[in-house]
Length: 294
Image (cartoon, rainbow, N blue to C red; front, side):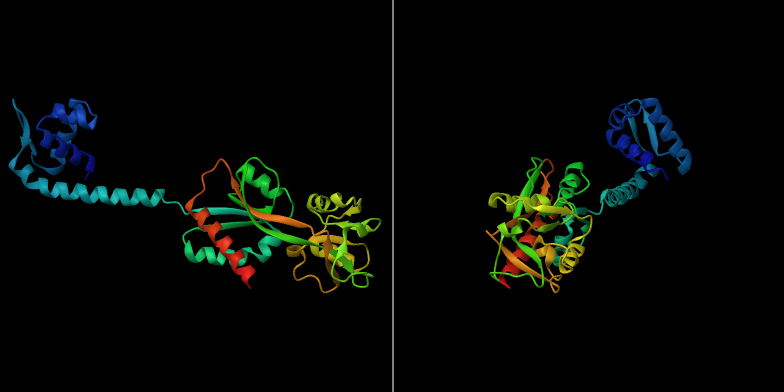
């Protein structure tokens, strides 16, 4: 049975006039009259009686009205629930993160986040290029990035961690001081530059020391660069997350003066931070706090 016709019937009966009812429901008076006639034919007996004072329910119509009202309330409730379910979209946070961060931080962070936001899905994208997270953020392909700091006006940046940079040397490298490696000692040596525009961070570390690198960029991943160093093909410099778990065949020595790379979390400055992203940030900050305590 057409609920729209029943709604109009109830409205007309409550107002006592087709004219008034037509103003409320947005139909012409003739159109409304036609719908009521069709409803009465469908039911099988008259529901309204017309007179010079307007309209009123017949005895049969009045007897049906409580059931009609109950039906319309139930129907409205059903439609509201269906509408809410259709509008309710599973929230997805799209994250772009450096490979080193994705490998060493994100599993624990996402485990914590899932425990407090089980209804939110996370799409993690691992990137190897220093500027790619910012390109993805600016284009709207990512909601959150985890990367090294870059000067981008569209990015709201949350500093997270300063990771040390290390000289990567062959096992037999003659060190004058086993605890540190002077940046100036890179001069004149074949330097294997990590791929992915990491040269930005390397140059930021060595240029203040007046070091000019004899650099060769290799289109290979960090682990391959480390293996090339172990084979005596040159030296390199990487951060602590980049070398974690890969140092058995090389020497990894902190550089002096101390050089670091600022890692952080970024969202687009023109997009409102959602409650889920705020909770993600809280998980990240607590993870780093716990990590420093261990």
